[in-house]
Length: 249
Image (cartoon, rainbow, N blue to C red; front, side, top):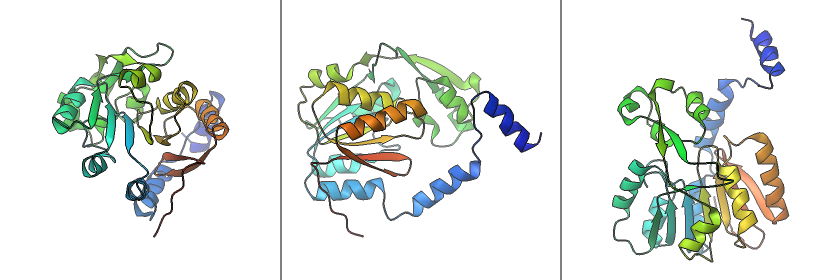
């Protein structure tokens, strides 16, 4: 089928085709950029601006984890949230007996929406790349978009907790960094955080999978809360106006 005709048909149904070259080139230039999340985090920690962290979507503490080395090096007060039991068990082993790390085996609940998550059955991991354990999502389509065979997808019933309940439970009243990576649910979580807490940390979240309308509302809310925003590697980096950082290249 002619590509232009396919694009028009998709447009009629509210969908838009995006060239795979865009994503490949975007990720390629990001891998060569002098500015990275690790660079930002390194400067924040060196300048003693991060003493407390909440990481929502901590996975197993190793895979796709930008914070692990900083938590261990600076012994920063950390709350790590991970709903998938297999990942959480590995997270417990990773941070065993560290009194400055708290762990929560729950998903963040908003409007009573989440009681289970979709994931790839571990026995089918060999069919896919190393990223597959990290794409667990409340949205089955998120896995399908990554090329996962629907027969390889299973549901896992999970515990859930609201943002306010989470911070109340762990008695957190001050936060310097909120780091969110929840494969598409990030926007709702950050909006709920801004609406239900008075804390103003640096916020880092993956925006690439967020629904466009939710993302627009979130950016508007961040602006109202006096955040400055820029993007790195498909992540939004949000600085409250009160926090200053100098970068050297």
